[in-house]
Length: 181
Image (cartoon, rainbow, N blue to C red; front, side):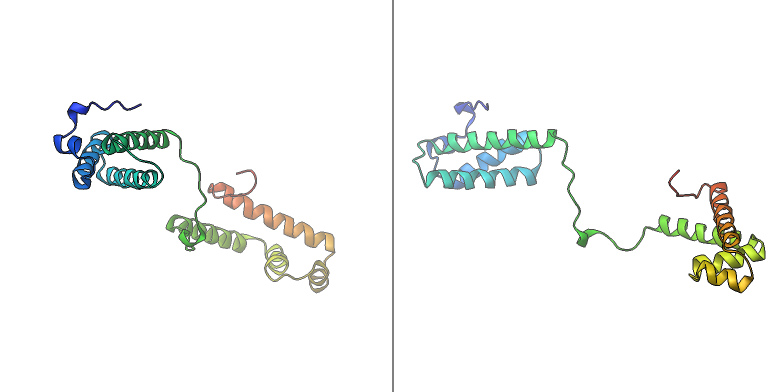
């Protein structure tokens, strides 16, 4: 509860609570002395007047200055309570999310692509051809097996070994991002 000493109020504000300019100046100093932020204090003064006018439309306010100072004090306490509570996680609107990847992500992807390209080039020719036809071209196991005169099991082994080669290449450089990462 904010205790307001009537002797600290300006004489003009004490005598004439309806003088809005004097009351505004008094409230602004009162709030600013507690919040130390001009923008927040102006917002709270505005909110104080909004609440005062809303209340005055339903009831008679005998001491406008005391009423407004009490409302401002309550608003100040509310503001401090809001600041002391950890901010709630809010979802960022899609319009604020940048669709372009960050530069560090781009560089990391380029590093991975260069490393994978080198690892593919280093594979034995048959393994490389099987892998590229199955994984990049999307050919079926039966088609690749028929064209290369291999069994379907051999095709699967070549693809498995090629994937293991690629994974090892990424792990050596600490660039693996699989489920174990």
